[in-house]
Length: 372
Image (tube, rainbow, N blue to C red; front, side, top):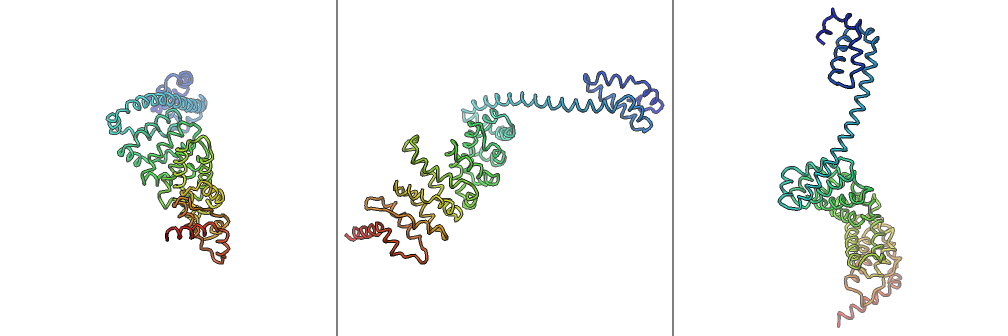
């Protein structure tokens, strides 16, 4: 290069194409050699009168060839490095996950910023590695300090994992989100990241219970309830509720728990007029279920729906309430409360009570019993 910077040597050097030949033959074997020779020709290229000579020895074409080769080699190196690195990370994190069975050891890992490392790895694409990472994060999420680390690092990165074709990864992600959904700030992040429609889309598959539990926690914040109207969440919950009653694969205890969870979610969302309209689209199904099973919890949701003004009120007059003295007091209270909410103008209530004669008879019998 020093020789090439001396103008008196330019012509002599260019006439001798030895540098070009060495570059052409040996550039693959030494990056330093290729860089040095090309730097010499770069010095020559600073003078336009030598451009023709540089072109004559085809340095420009050779530079293009070298650049293309190096870019391809970089991609191959990067892919190979990523594969080897992800294999190492998967094994190393699995080892740490096993050691984290000891609570003291787990807290020591937290003090060494393990949560920050795990959140950074969530960007990777390998499902097996992600399964270990999400499982690790879920284990840490039960600790307040680790949960606060997740608040700082944000849960937005988890959005891309929903939905997932990898069942175990999907299940682990939903369990992590469920643990985190008890925190108000994290629920806000979930909503802003678009988790409501993502979780609603999972209500029709095997992840239904976990998805519904997370949605219920989100619905605890009144400001988010109106967002449920823009998804298929409410119709899916309604169908799932009926399915839980009809399915013979559920035990009685698990079916009861499912229904209670479903109804609590519907009650909290049924307070919004837009959501009420959606649920009323399946009112016939709900009424049939409530009256058949004498379910006070389902009837309570129907009562909540009946308090909204508009076209929805007229739908309740189509269905007949059938009560008798053997009904539970809670169920009767919800039925009467529903009727009390039907403040519809220009309705012939004499005709209504003629239709609902069992209700009137029940009230008379109840008053007579209390007087005695």
